[in-house]
Image (cartoon, rainbow, N blue to C red; front, side):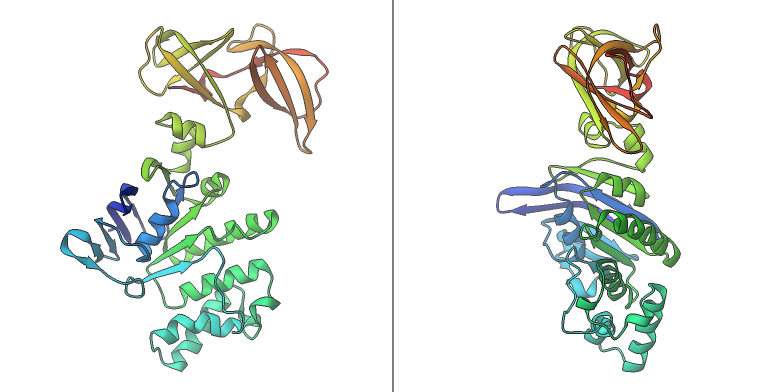
Length: 351
C-alpha cells in the first residue's frame, strides 16, 4: 500500500475553487513533485496534505491511517498526521542551537530527554551535522541550514516528508549538490516525499513521479520521462522543457503524424490529439532537438541566421524565416548566413 494516498481533494477560498479534485499516491522511498505555474495550486495542495489548509471534499491516508475524510467530518490537525514539513524559509529558531532546533518537535511530543539526545544525535550524523550541533543558524551556510530543517522533520520519524521549495534559497551550484543529496537521503531512509517546486529541471531530476498542476487540477501525472517525451496535452508539452511553439493550419494528417503550414514554415509532428486537414493546430518542439541539417535532409527548412551567442559549452544561434524564430544549439561557431534547420518530427507534438 502507498505510504500517502490523496483522493479527490477540493478546496475553495470563498466561491473560488483553488483545487478541483487532485488525486495521487506516493510509495516508500519515492518522491512526488508538485509542479506547475504560479497560482496552479501546488503549495495549497501540499499545505492541505499537511493539515494547514482545510479541504471541502476528499480523503487523505498516511501509512494506512485516514487523516482526512471530509464526508465523515474527519480532519486531524497537522501535529497528529505523522508528517514532516520543510518550509521554504527553513523556519529555524535563530536563538536556538542546531541541537535545540532539531529537538523542537520531539520536545513538543514530550519525548524523554535521553531519547531526544539519541534521536537528534543519530539524525544529525546522517545529515553531516554532528559537529555543528552547538552552533546557531546564523553561523551556518545556506546548505547547512537546509539540512537542519530536514533533520528537524526527520527526527520524529515521520512516514511522509513534505517539502515546500526547499532548494530555492540556495545558489545554483549548491542547489545541484543538495538535489542529489536529498534524493539519495529519501531513497536510503525509505521515506515517502512530496516536494513543491517551480523549477522543472529540479522536478525532472529529483522526482520519481511528477504531478503537473494547472488551475487547481492535474494536467498530467507520470514519470519525468513520460511528461518530457509523451505529453498528453498542449499545456504539458509547452510547460515541460525549453520549447519552440508554432501555430498554423493542418495540411496533412495520418499514421499518427500531422503537418502544419505555419505561414511558409512547414512542421511535421506526432498528433497529441486527432487532427483533420484544414483544422488549426499548434506544434511544440524541444529546442534541444533542433539541429543544423545537411542539404536534402528530411524535416529541414532553410532559414537565415540573425545572431549567435557563446554560452560556454555551446553556441546558441537565432534563425528566422518570415515571422518565425528558432534557436539552435551547436558545439562551435557557425559561419554560414543561411542553413537548413532540422525540426525532427519524432520530437514535435501537434495539438
